[in-house]
Length: 431
Ligand code: ACO
Image (cartoon, rainbow, N blue to C red):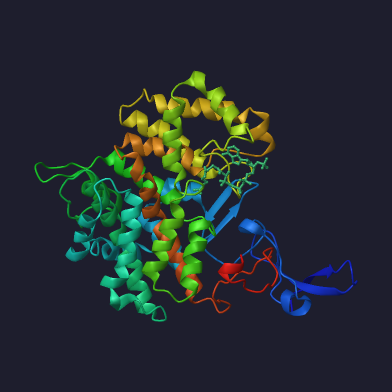
């Protein structure tokens, strides 16, 4: 029995029920409503799950009011400054920062599982040349369960480990194969002597005709973006992975479902949409017109890269990426980036506008990330794929947590039915 309780009273009958209140280590309490339906016959209604904690988790914490994001208790600013993506992967998966030996072993395991089954590589030939890379990546990741039967027993911890290493290691290779397909270039095999980010750049931009030297600044920028995108508690794609996985589906299918959910412009697809929007705005003198469009209730246009379900103060990832934009563009010698200038001016104008102030709409992680990707030579259609590569570790960490959760059950929400009441079938001749 929990120490704190919450009393709920039916205004018609006066009946009361007591609900347990559960407290986490930090953050708001939650009402445990699991007995609600059995004792009152009612459900709760929370479209979009804005007030619903769908699970208990120890992985990531966000305080949207303070603009705070922590992975396993470590503030993301500290990880961005001091850690590496591969170390953050270990942290998210295992709960603690690794020792030197643990990190070296983990890094080596991921580096040596980067190759794809050659048959899987041939799947890309089945896609049209202008297929969106997210469509290819979702399809090929889904197909992994057909290649790696030896890691689909979700109740075997060893299978779960192999799956985690495999999917982390192969995501950049799958992404690069999708990219090479879109530009009709030969696939570049992974190089296990390179770090995660360097290997990815090598597979993207390497060609067989000449030596490709990976740019250190580009690799560092990518590593930083990957750290910032690695996890974000129960967001749309992560909840999708948990939900798909809760049925006992194999983990590759659950990740493919997450990739599909990430693609939408309200979620990870926003980074591609931001770049398209900035190009559509075109110049500073057009900003007011587009801000007015975003405020117009009758216009579906929204400022992409603005607003967040949880952050109502600032998105700490956006602040870090804005700073990184300045640094990376300078280091790459791109001091005149009209798109970055436009984005900075748009942010400035929107943040002074009453509409955005009242609704607490701030730039989110995707507002500036595309500007760095663009500077690294990554095409706009690949932006959400980059997000998917980084978020894979978050999805895997949550899937693993879900599988061993003693409270875990198949995810199966209910509804408020407002359709027709029972009626008799009418033959087609009488309609
Ligand atoms: N531009 C203009 N108005 C906006 C915007 C925006 N970008 N975002 C929210 N609003 C308005 C809504 O119209 C709504 O107004 P109302 O109260 O008058 O109806 C109010 O602000 C609240 O918005 P909701 O859509 O109810 O907020 P929700 O939490 O459901 O959605 C979301 C959050 C999807 C991120 C939303 O802000 C949005 O669409 N932003 C643009 C897309 C984007 O950048 N997505 C990336 C999010 S980060 C990530 O997933 C990686």
